[in-house]
Length: 467
Ligand SMILES: [Zn+2]
Image (cartoon, rainbow, N blue to C red):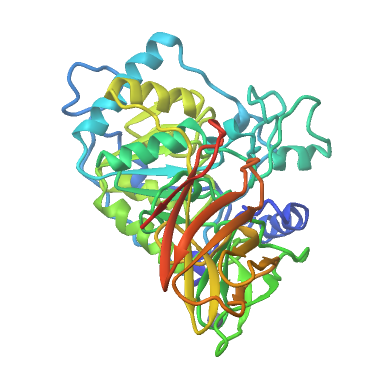
């Protein structure tokens, strides 16, 4: 992988203090290079904004475009200069549309979504602040209930103001905007999601993994350093306090491999996952509409993705409270909180926003005189450790009960138990959403795959279906 795919800012929640120090060091080292973060080249700087085009009668788009500048190559071998620049107060200023302006802009955005052939969404920390997860850059006077950003607090050397809300990644419920994106995808109106966030909320909201590029990793995802197998966990995978030590202490399930597992968080100066980054650029090249939701667009090379859409003379809509380096070049800028934008757009499109549902899969396998339980992601591709305990009560033989408390959840069949047999299963979970245990009573024979669904806001029991 080339140096160009390195992330030039910290995005890991876990290693904030260490990474801030490193940022400052890098900023000094790159001082000569840091003229402005995310510079467009001279030619493209002349590039004017994409018009509202075919948008019927809406007045919010920007002026007509000049001939397109040469398309910028994918990340070059030069490290991208990018400074956090959190001391600059003008970057922290929050802007707000007046209600009429906002309504008009949302009309335009809804029309553009309907017109688009390949709409992609690019998300940053601003899409998650309404879930209780603080962002990085918001200033001391932010309107956000999560309070000032982490970097801002670090720079000022102060704690979050009293009353600021802070939720852990694992307890956060995907926002109305996360869920709106799921619906837009189901309706064929959003083709792909690129995210700078490590909170895992897009995946948890129900976006399929193949339609998502998490450029900076996912706090719930770890990978085998030898064979590359991915493992999702319903707990934080990162364990080391050292910034660049990614080993989690766990090992690959494959007995022939047993490689060290490493967390997927990308720290400052580390390489972005090439596959995800390339996919992001491929989607940008196909995109005729890129909606930026809650990103300062100051983190490269991630921010090069919407920039490429601009260079291709296609529409980029930037929804963010603060200005970004691309606002002068985008087709439409909307200064409002992200949920306000997405709720308004969905209303205009006549689409309901679905309630957040936890969806998981469970594989139960009876073979070789044993019964085993394996959590999987919805796509059935990635092992997903969401079980805490498994209690099996066999209704054959002497009616033995077995409590399994660690992976792999596997136990021999007791004497007198043969296939097919009936058993009561109680699955204990991590409980981040106060979800109840899952109870399954079935006749087991060979392999069975279950879909498990639960709506935290409704409470009640899990819906368990075979498939
Ligand atoms: Zn492995």
